[in-house]
Amino acid sequence: MRLLVTGGAGFIGANFVHQTVTERPDVRVTVLDALTYAGNRASLDPVTDRIEFVHGDVTDVQVVDRLVADSDAVVHFAAESHNDNSLADPWPFVHTNVVGTYALLEAVRRYDVRYHHISTDEVYGDLALDDPARFTEQTAYNPSSPYSSTKASSDMLVRAWTRSFGIRATLSNCSNNYGPYQHVEKFIPRQITNVLDGGRPKLYGAGANVRDWIHVDDHNRAVWEILDRGAIGETYLIGADGEADNRTVVETVLEILGRDRADFDFVPDRPGHDLRYAIDSTRLRTELGWAPRFRDFRAGLEATVAWYRDNEAWWRPQKAATEAIYANNEQDLE
Ligand code: NAD
Ligand code: DAU
Image (cartoon, rainbow, N blue to C red; front, top):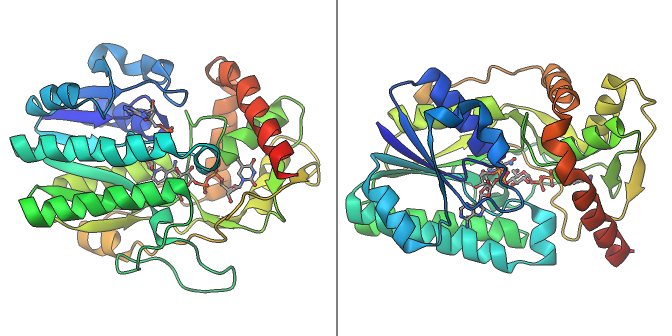
């Protein structure tokens, strides 16, 4: 099988490539990645001699056409992925997430190539903190941020191309991922590396917002289940029952690293900050037999902390610039 993985130098994509190369030696992997600030060629170092890497943009129709024509399937991870950045400058999100998806859809349509679209639970908006409900495949779209609205737009394109042109597509919406190779701008790596640097974690607002954490390897195993056995035209929600509020996550990170649990700062809240995400993944579990392997969030966090402690050379080059952006954002919000 010839598999094109877009965004394979990013967090989830790189872990997907590692997993694929290790567990599916019959798959020939080509990565297409623009190496934006979020893409890191070093994330693919452990597998570099077992894949083809193409430095290119998903909005470049010529590159996309050539690579899709030479593929049996495409998994589309590439995106602008960070909510805070989308508030500061939405255009790259519209361009990559919407126009990039359009370019891929037209190519898979032309060559009748199997397509899997990676998306997020944020397309459903948020839930109240005291609402027992969870998102299902039937929940109406209601995105809040420029990031999530562009992901919702891309999902709509996939659905329309499936119905109108009969492309062979599936779609998945996953909750918050954690694990190795995640950019230090994101919540968990930011706090781990702050503490490793002797600094203090930063909690937006009151730290009460809830995210539904899943280990990146469990997300990627679900993607393979959908590629193998998912029904064409269908959507699957991916989540591992990992709800935790942000304050608890920060306190756990501090505790794992031997610091006082109260050693954090509250900083101004993210505008429009979604309160709570929660996924009901019954469909994926019952129809495709998927189940998460990382069921103990604290154990998963401990492994992630250990990875950042052991891989400073990977994250150090991004840390100062990332914190400078946050310092600027904070000033604007004060
Ligand atoms: P990331 O920001 O870590 O990686 C994105 C990758 O895409 C980078 O390697 C970047 O260089 C590449 N890229 C960006 N623009 C590109 C372009 N125009 N052309 C080619 N490559 C480009 O993101 P991530 O956290 O790994 O997320 C991957 C996908 O999973 C995204 O579609 C995101 O919406 C989705 N998702 C993420 C999460 C999460 O918790 N991180 C949860 C659910 C869904
Ligand atoms: O739900 C899936 C989504 O999860 C993905 O689609 C996105 O690509 C991914 O970035 C993530 O979005 P969030 O906005 O939930 O993730 P982030 O890591 O930015 O923040 C997680 C929570 O932590 C959120 O409630 C905001 C809060 N936060 C974040 C940072 C960076 C803080 O309290 N302090 C921080 O410093």
